[in-house]
Length: 212
Image (cartoon, rainbow, N blue to C red; front, side, top):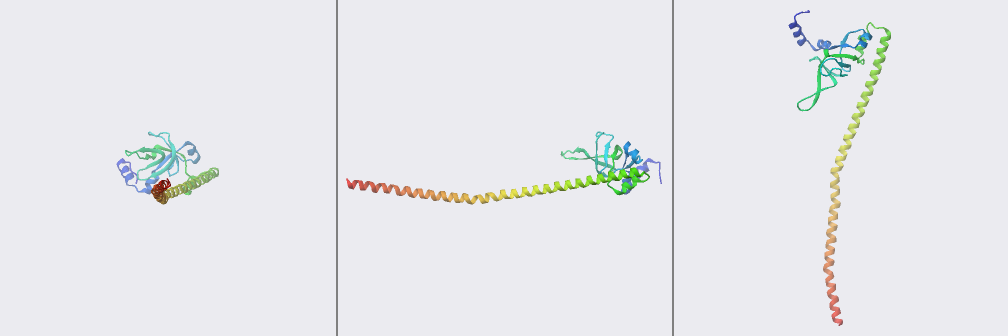
């Protein structure tokens, strides 16, 4: 049942289930997309490129990072705010303050909905764009996996270097002990030699006296 009473409309909006609220998160299409797909608005999903039309971030254009169905807001890449702690978090933007400039066509069901009532040429164009986006997504996944591998290797190398640094002083203590032992032995030898040398001089002096 439809109602004109705004209080009932607001109540239904807040008490609506998520599967119905998800359909309400829609935005207007850009002029080029409007002429191409013959649609005024479409639901926003993750991966759509979007331009902010109102507010402090007006004119900012980037991809949608997340869709919040409970609050009817979008998290757009590059739009952040700083907390009192100094940490940066994504600033939510209402879907009504946004215009779609490029669609994410990786979803099969979305392509089927867009292709309804369109000519064969536009359908072929949609499929080509979808293939390009899929290849780009695969390349991005590979790049992310390579970065993760490099980070893991760097962590392993750091751990090995730390272990080597910890083991090095233990190994170096042994030669230091040997050096101290050698020093003590040399000192004892020198002391014994010093003690014996004056005796030799005394014997020499007595021999010289007897000769006289």
